[in-house]
Length: 112
Image (cartoon, rainbow, N blue to C red; front, side):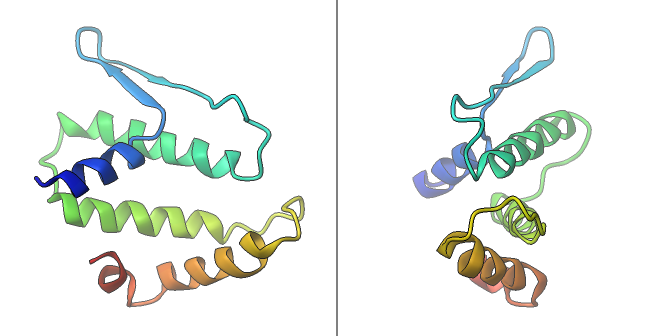
């Protein structure tokens, strides 16, 4: 696995730490837990924790496929309509754009 995929996997690992001895998974909540992207950051951590629980039970897909699946999940989270989101370019333009991309047939091409 090359360096780029290692970096991407670290980013998708979120704030999750697994103790190999006790099989405990710890999710660290960022200090800025009230930020506008805090729910998304928490969901990334939850996806990483779910991946950790599956590692021993199932054969893992190639890193590229895992990246596509995780990116699709992340983009679907951006489509969550929430009235409390700020009125800015991120939520008015980027979030709907990436949500639509995640729902399209072009996600795998985008991830490649």
